[in-house]
Length: 555
Ligand code: FES
Image (cartoon, rainbow, N blue to C red; front, side, top):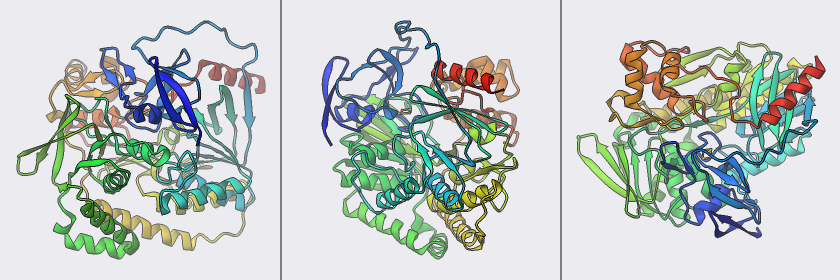
C-alpha cells in the first residue's frame, strides 16, 4: 500500500492508502473526533457507520464519518465542532443525478448472508443488484483488509465469497447509504452524491446486526469502543485501538478480538466476561461440542492461545464505570461476590451481544416478534425465509441473531427462493440447506447458554449516566421526562429527545424500552421499540431532491 499524507487539526499525519480516516487518526494517537453540544469529546465507537460519533470535517465539509471515509492524500481533516459553520452556499445542481434500477432481486447487505444470497440468486438466473454500505464487501464477520492481505482462514473464506459474488454477474454497488424503503417495494439510497432508486421484484434484506453496548457511566468517552470497532481497525486496517486494551461484555467475539489484538502486539490488560466460567457447566459444554464439534474445538483452542499469551481472562466480571484518567481510561468492574476490580488501558472494547439491524425490514412492514431470551426482535419468516410481506426475504442476523455460518445457509435458501419468485426457478432442493440451518441454529442456542448477554436493569445506573449518546440525554433526564409524561416510548422521545439524534436511537432505543418496561412492569413486545423513521441514515439533501424529482418524473 502506498503512503498518503493528510493533516488533522493542522498536524501532519501519515496513513496508508485505503485506510479509513478513523484508522489513520487512531494510528496517529488521536481519539477525539467530534465535540458534542455539551462540549464533550467523542471518538470511534461502533466503527461501522451506525453511531455517528466519529464525525469530522474534511476539506471544509462537515459530518463525514471517519470510520466510513477513506484517507486520501492531501486531505485536511478537522475536529468537528458541536455546531459546524455552514459550508459555502454552492447551490443545488440544476439536475441532481439519479439512477433507476429494476432488478429481479435486490440484495441489501454485502456480508455473509447477502453475498451468499447474491450468488444463489444469480445461479438461478435472476438479475441481481447488491447494495453494500462498506467500501469493500465482506460485512462484519468476514471483514476484509484494505490492502487485500489475509490474516487468517476466516478472512480467506470471506475473500473467496467476495470473489465468487463479484464473478457471479451481479451488479454489486459498494459505499451506498440506504435511507428509505417503501411499499412497492421501493428502496432509496445515495451513492457517490447521486440518488439510487431501486424498484426490484423481490428484496433480500441482509443488513446484519450491530453490537449491544454496556451502558455505564463513561461509556461515551473517547477510547471506549465496541469490540467490533476494534476488530475492524485491526483486521481491515492493521491499526491497534490502543497499546494497552481491556475487553469486556460477554460472548465469543470478545475472546477472538482479544487474541487477535494480542497477536497484533497489543497488551491485553484484561478480558472481563460477564458469564461464569464455561467449565462450570460441563453439560452445556458437552452439548455445544455435540452441536458443533469443529466450532467448539476452535473456541477451546482460542482459550488455550489466550492462556499461552498470558492474557488474563476473568469470568463473572461486569463493567460498572469508565473514567478518564491520566494517560488513558480506568475501568471498574463488579464481581459476582460484590467486590470490585479496576483495570487501566488506553482503549476499552465492549460487546454484550447484538441487536438486529432491522430498520429496513420494519419499514417494509415485515412482522416481528420479541424474543425474551435474546432480548431483541425476531423477524417472522417462512421456511423459505420470506417475511410476512410477499416478496421480501430476511437473511442472517437482521432477522434475529444466528451467526455467520447460519447466515450463509440462509442466503442460499433466500437467494434461490427470491429468484424463483421472480420466475427463475432452477429446481433447487431446499432439504439439505434446511438441515444444515437447523444444525447451525442448535449450535448458536447452545453457545449463548454459556454466555450472559441478559441486559442489566437500566434503572439501577447512576442518574447522570448518558442513555442517548447523540442527544446527551441522561438516565435522570429520561426518568424525569417519564414522570411528567408517563406512557409510551414515543411520548418519552418527544419529552426528552431521547433517540432523536443521528443514530436514530439504535443504541439508546432498546435500553430506553427496557427502562419503561422496568417502570411499568409491562412485558416487552414488538410494539415496545422506536418505530424506524425515514431517513434511516443521515443523507445529503441533494440525494433526496434527486430521488423526489426522478420519482415525480416516473409517475
Ligand atoms: S464510529 Fe463511525 S459511525 Fe460509529
